Image 1 (tube, rainbow, N blue to C red):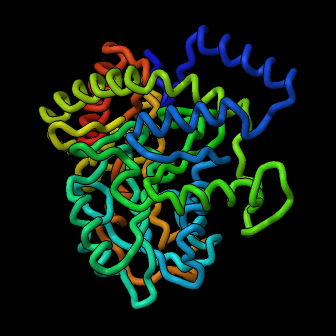
Image 2: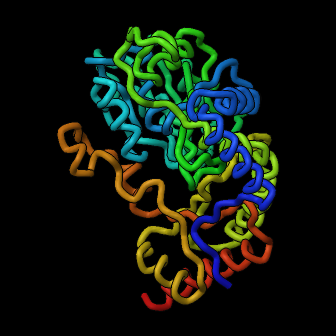
Length: 376
């Protein structure tokens, strides 16, 4: 059996609807910031219990727009070191300096303690990344820490479509949340992103920033230094159609994760991240930590070549403070993140995964670990 690292799920009916809408869009010439964008924004806001949503060209753009709306230029912004480079790029392009922080081994996310060790007198904002779709159970403590110090908490929710902790959805714990619709994400529009917020000022600023800083779509009066961050109507209709399956995808992935949980809890030599009871994780990544000393490259090679199981990409294989592009911002050692980045793997999990595929993955994973142990 072959299990790929990722699989994008669009039903024949979905493809037909998107194709029909695309013909309509091309025939009318209403190709950007039209009805499909409005409908996508409304549906995404409703799915995440958010008052406002603004569709943009990418998750990176969403994060940069939020940071620009907070006027972080010249300030420091705390960023977890185990995140995608785009998180820090957005900080830099918004005119701020990223200050890298360590994370919790239990959630791969920032804690109040981690942020306290990284804040400076010039810190204006903190970016919390929901790695793999897991919202940390201590998110309220971090939010309170930021509120007490006048720091804006921004959520990089690129992984966290439909995720919830308690009664709060991703994007509701800080001033705004940035989502991505890149093809690998749970919900995709091909390319694109979304800002969710309860703050009218951020909402209004985002509408201006995404369209070259113009005061209105049809005018040419520019009031901010915006950019071409619009989402096309073709992308919007793709995302709108895919979003209808959010609950179905969450249910399927939770069932797969439950099978993985049971198998891994009975396996020596590996541990998993744990989702608090009652919370919703979309398992964008199912993260496993093999015991120290396991050669990750050999493990992945064994799984792919002997068992046909391709592991999905890490989150992330190298912390940002150790990457050449961020050498000007590197500072102290961040040992927890360094260990997590070097050691973890992500089991494949798809929105249409079968029980047979899931069982094959965990059986193969156990056998590959045992094989590496025998090889010494």
